[in-house]
Length: 251
Image (cartoon, rainbow, N blue to C red):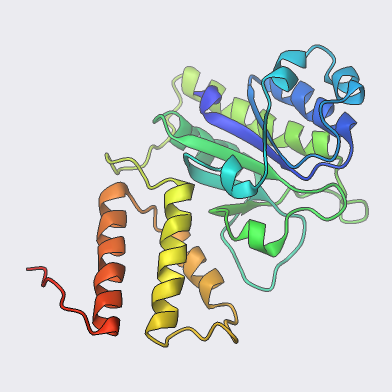
């Protein structure tokens, strides 16, 4: 179950933090580490801080984009330390752990995403997450070390997993069909944006927050594969009508 939860670190500046995160993960039984454009990796500093979690560093996946890091995931939970102009579904660490295990125990792939040490995740990156996770630290000294933040969420995931092992009830989504993965959702968002521009609903010169709001809407809808096929089909037929092409009516 825990093997279905990956930790994604975005643009990590200090290799020691990668090692510290790997140690925190191994302490809590998480094993899959994905690095998005780390500044310095592999590194002796990372190995030194890993303190025995070198196997996680050796097996870490290094990718060029957050989109690549999220391929196959049906639930993405991104850490956020500050309020955003666009409200987004928010979880605390305990809720994050429970939700991650709810989905992971059904075989789904889950991502816990952590941003840069100095600036966290960008708004664009946060819009690729289904939920934002805020760690309620001391407001007078709120900045958490990256490895410490990983430790908090990894601990909550392990606690939820232990509760399942002990027979405590953890709800699992009712849908029997697998949810659409994040790469499938990204292709849908691209298709949706193209269609909205084509029919004149979205002005690319003045997009405002339309696509962000639609991401939030569909992100909380738990779209499965059949529903995704329907949505993509609607967009395709809409584009045909907009181009004046014949289309097949769906009865």
